[in-house]
Image (cartoon, rainbow, N blue to C red; front, side, top):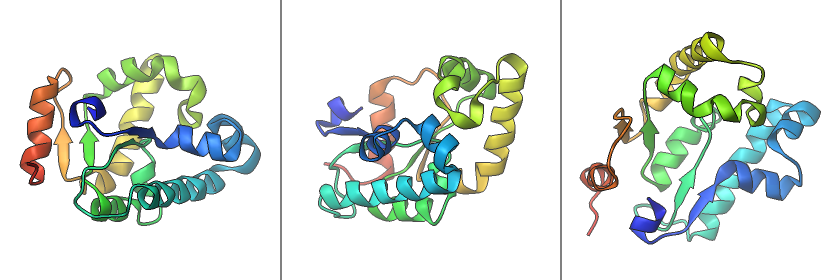
Length: 159
């Protein structure tokens, strides 16, 4: 998507890992989730400042984890400074996508099969009030890039 929009791409988790000098799993284990969530918020603010902090401009694509919108006022803050997109596939599809990532995602660590699907369903239900504030929701698992970009254009006036 960033390539199609001709803007840079940033991964919020990678940004936190780089600034903290340690992996997310180590941050969770050694400093706890509240510390991570604070650093995640600081990373969001730093990225917006780096990108010029102009609401309504297309300066970058920022990938964030599923918990990001659910802490502090992050979802409202992200909506103020950008166009938020909720990627919302079926739980089993999401589990298939995340199965190889569970070692890198502290909240999913050790989960496989139906346990992973159940945890994802629980987290999505718990997080739904935040996710529903996203300006765009994509449910289609195999959406074409042009279709995805059209959904973004329909949500915000793009040239």
